[in-house]
Length: 337
Image (tube, rainbow, N blue to C red; front, top):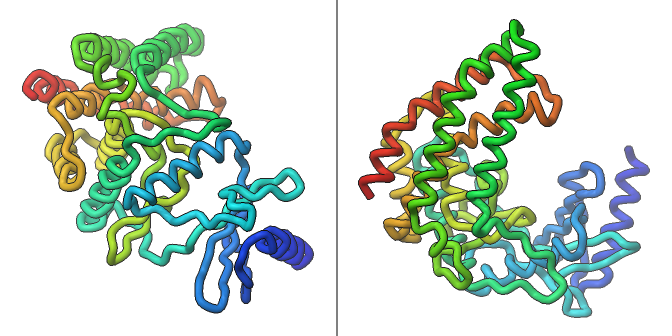
C-alpha cells in the first residue's frame, strides 16, 4: 500500500510539473482502477487533479463543455490550463485534468432545503450550457431526437423477455415479471402515442432553444452546496438533450424512494427548477411524457435479463405498482398543460 501511494505521488508530481503551480501537499482522495483523484495544496490555493478513464475525444467534449458553462457564469469548477495552454495533460498515454478545488457540503436530497437548492442549481447548469459548440476532434454525445427509437427498443426487449420468463414460470421473479409486463408495455405504448402527438420534433430540431447539456447522473456526490449556490461536479456523462431527461431521472428516483407515486412532489420538483430556468408548456409536457414511460420498470428488470444480476420478485412488484399508479396523474397533466 505504501509503495502504491508513493507511485501515485510520483505520478501526480510528474503531471503537476507541467503546470505553473508549486505543490506543498498532495493527497490521494479517490482511487479505483485508472480513475484517480488527488487533492493538491499549494501555498495559496487548492486544486483537484484527476486521472481520467475516458478517451481524449470523449474528455475533450465534456471538458470544453465545462469551460463553456463556467464562462457563462455556471457554477462548475474552473479547469486549469497547463503550460501548453491545454485543458488535458497527456502523460505516458494517460490523461489528466486539473481543476480548482470546491469546498462545500454534500447535497442531501432527503432534506427539503437541500433538494430545493439542488434543483435550482441544476436549472442554472442547464441554462448556462445552452449554445455550447464542441471543438473539432471531440466525440459528441447526444440523445437529441432519439426518444422514439429508444422507447420502441425498450418495449421490444420487454416483449422478448416475456418468452424467457414464460419458460421459467413458477419461479417468483419470473412470475412477477409476467404479472406486470403486459400493463407496463401498454403504458409504454401510451407514452409513445403522446410523444408522437407532441412538439418533440420541434424541440429536438437543430438550434432549438430547448436543447441543453444534461448531466445524467445528478445527485448526491455530484453537487456541493456552498454559500454561492450548488456547484456541479463530474461532467463526463454530459450529453445534448432536453432538460426533461435530468428532471425525469430525479422525479422517478424520488418516487422510488417514497415507494409510491406522488404528483405533488413531482410538481414541487419542477417548480423549484423553474426558479432559475422557466420551462415552456411543451417542455413541461416532455417531462410528463418521459416520466410516463416505464423507465423505472425497464431499469429494474434489465438487471435480471440483460446484466445477469439477480433481481428480487419484490423489487419487480414494487416498481410495477409505482409505474402503474402514475398513469392517471400524468395523463391528466399531459392533456391539461
